[in-house]
Length: 445
Image 1: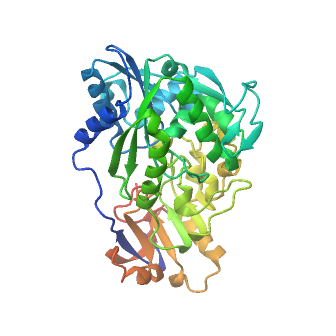
Image 2: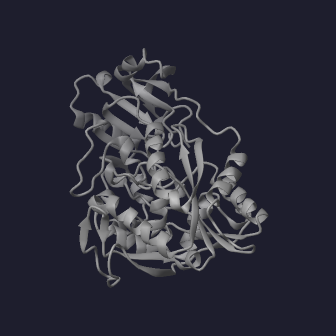
Image 3: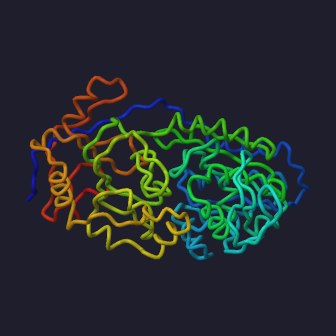
């Protein structure tokens, strides 16, 4: 038995150009060689490869191929955890996060070194200051007086190769957002580095990251990086090896490409956006703030688009292990999601970043049906059939979405969209769970 509403849904496919790399192994090997162009490492040198906590397509294949290529050159590669405070800043938690991404010593064929140990490299743009001090000044060149830390295992290696995806950040905008420089500044800084950076607040992150990265490049044996850019369908579109001396210029250029390729919702104005599942495996904020147009950071302006009246979250991914950082971006959720929240992991994440509003638990309801009913009540729309509703599986996979009839009519003549299915009644099973064919997290048990 199902409960049904007058709202009718249509499944829409968004089309994007096929920009994926056809021969990934070859591209990886070529990137390794390019990144080492300016390196002068002796045979047998120990090379630390960064392993972060962000979801990257085929990251296990990428890391294993890099390991193999470095071995062929006569080096001794190993992976080092580089995820800031994620994994609770502890070795066991770091290994668990990496394993959830498919990164294990067996899958990559190399040792993975995890710990909370760091080395202090000095301070940014000026004299060293006590480790407990925040920035002393903010100049056009960056942030001065900020302590800089690096994972001990990486610093003690003969060379460091940074690997990361370049993409827009979910808390700030700048020439350098989420990418290789942030991996240096925050990821390799582990919990002390993350705490130091986030002590500044979101407004200064854009200046802090390049400032810290400059110190890392000067004081640590960074030999280069491999930058990854994914297209709107989460396929590897660009893979570029970059020598250490070219990191700044290359990342600035690649960030523009990443912004051009990033996925988006099919329309800008939405009454109710239902998110099937949020989680750290989809975005560092559980839901990508750039996709749903919400920052929820004190002192940071909210984006004008997309304009979404209400956001409802129906699930928290198992890969998040209870870390619901970003749940505060939503207006509604379910009691089941609230019960699955690990407060310690969520609070640590949001207290470290200083974005505490993102940990605020929204209004919660017994099930999906009650959530939708109450959201409709809050919208005060006389005719539910006119509600502009969009359902997405998560904020990472937006190639196929479900939309209500008013949105579908707007998309019918768009060449980048195709109606695949519908109309289908917005309905729920006897337990109040949303029923949508082929949507993870919405099927009945």
